[in-house]
Image 1 (spheres, rainbow, N blue to C red):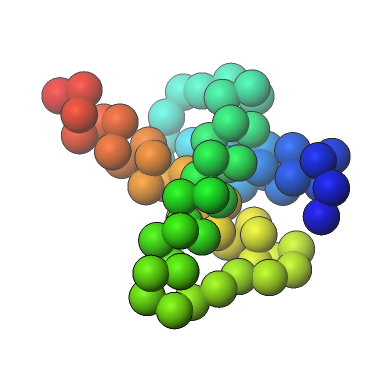
Image 2 (spheres, rainbow, N blue to C red):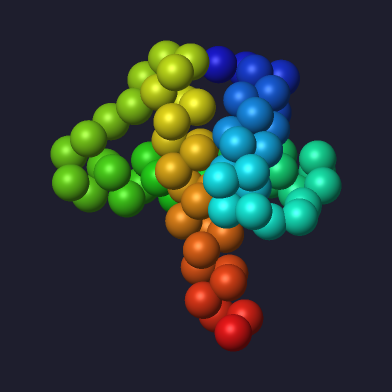
Length: 78
């Protein structure tokens, strides 16, 4: 997947995660959450031997990772 695809998938994953977690973030933060979340989720799931591939796999990894990032931010900021 190219950079454009990663940005689009990251934006969608970040938007879904911000909706699930009821966080009030903008489009840029959603894209960043989705992309960084995908990296985090792929790393964490790689530790237990699970890998994601394809469009749907990237979306799931980005969503899970973005939710983890939002949760972590809230836990640290309180």
